Length: 206
View (tube, rainbow, N blue to C red):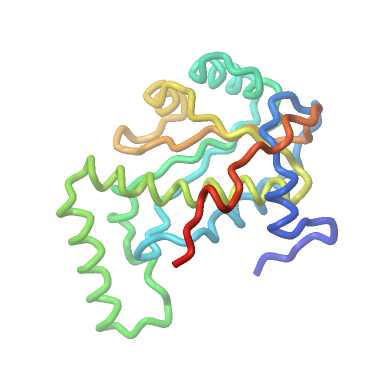
């Protein structure tokens, strides 16, 4: 069970306050805060409860410098005290499929669920299955950004990077999909205020 810190924000407040921040205060993030951000991100829903997301938290300065090069020298990689690399791995999900089965499932239902999930993913083929997993991973990305803001940290999610270089640098398997690099820390700038479409532009009620 995750305990909410007294200073944590509501989901609405976190979403309202969040900005993309690229310059950070040079202050390490306590390990327990990083772990809680990951734990909240892991609460994201996924089809079949597959939970294909995985995380690498990069804090080492030398490694961040190499990661920055793989991210086309975006300044937030070097500025942030931590960069969370979010990737998805369907091969690992299939290999350890029993881990995603709810412990309360009866044995017969568990066996049926395993067969259904593995069959679904294997029928897709590796490339399509990994793309499917990456789509699930984007849900966890949204949770991660709100979790960081809710705990009083700012962030910048980056899609601009060389995924093969990131995988090689971090020793990740060739099959995985890297969804995003997320710079996290105490912001040293305010960022741009929100400029979003109104609900009337985005939604139709029928």
